[in-house]
Image (cartoon, rainbow, N blue to C red; front, side, top):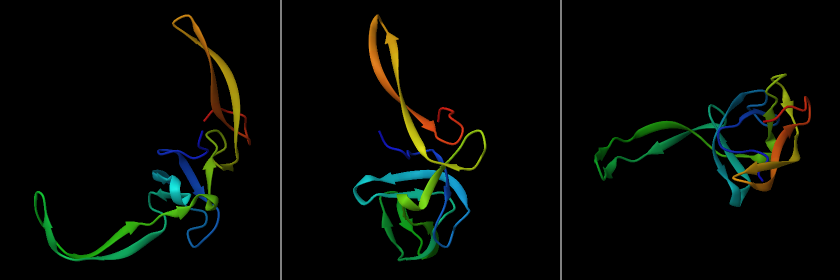
Length: 113
């Protein structure tokens, strides 16, 4: 189970955007990086060209670049501060069958994420 998933609220703990918070847009597992909304924005020069639906205009765009997963920390739902992630196993019964499920837990407050 991943500690940080798409849609999680995270805070940046290192780098030029330290202290900013944002929602995870994408998780790149192969390179251990995440794309966070509003964080690590870089300018990208885009060449005008053709797409499937028509022409694409060129110019300078500002897009979010990936940031290493070690530089972000999950935001605790209760205290709104950065927290480490732990796991708790639960027995869940569905349709008469019992399954063991891992649940992510905030270390700071103990609340489910």
